[in-house]
Image (cartoon, rainbow, N blue to C red; front, side):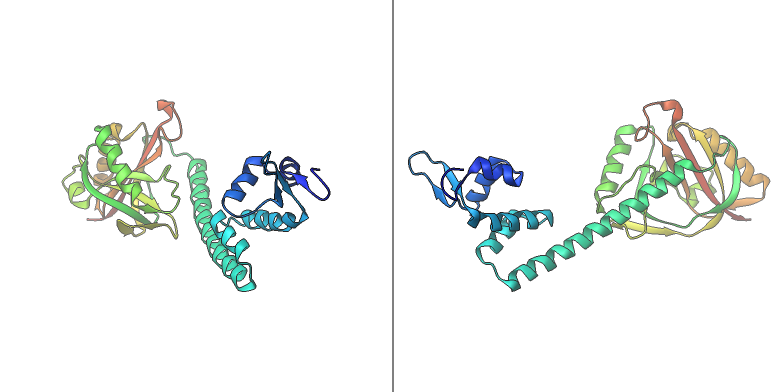
Length: 274
């Protein structure tokens, strides 16, 4: 203790679990002034008069309020002011909760996708395709052109709003017109699957649920040709025609593993009777 009823800055820092530099920063912001500063040595001393403001600062920091807002309150304390600040912070907390809930849904969906019952690779499966909402970037894309593909992905992702988790959600699309001509390259659009409540400032399309054919194959989009041939062959055998745009979905790639032998892509092709 620096004197009767006075505490050195280091003692106060230890009492409150903060650094000396933090207390000096509070002083520069006019948040907390020492009780006494020795004019000869520059040593700062605090009294119990500073403990209550320090408690308030710590409480408001735990609520996430920025220091300038706290300084405004400390220097203009009143019930209406603290009520205003807390209401603003409550709104921000609720917004963060919504964002985290969206991230949680994305993570759960990704885990579910990775844990799904494996379908033998190269086998064409018949069944329902789920409805989806997607952010779409219409552009002719050759997956083999890695640089152009990555630039397109960045353009699509940057238009998203909020903390998107895009692993396993991005893929390439082929239009119904291209499919009718049995053409799957170049791809006609890039897409990112949007979770419930996830916003995007670009073009968003809703893909309805549909009956379809799907196939999974080892590797990335550049190895899709044999899988497409199997899909077209099965479609012809069943007397079906493309019922809408097809999706090449990146299931596993460099975002999840460095082992290229673990890469996995799925093609989903909605179909209809001819």
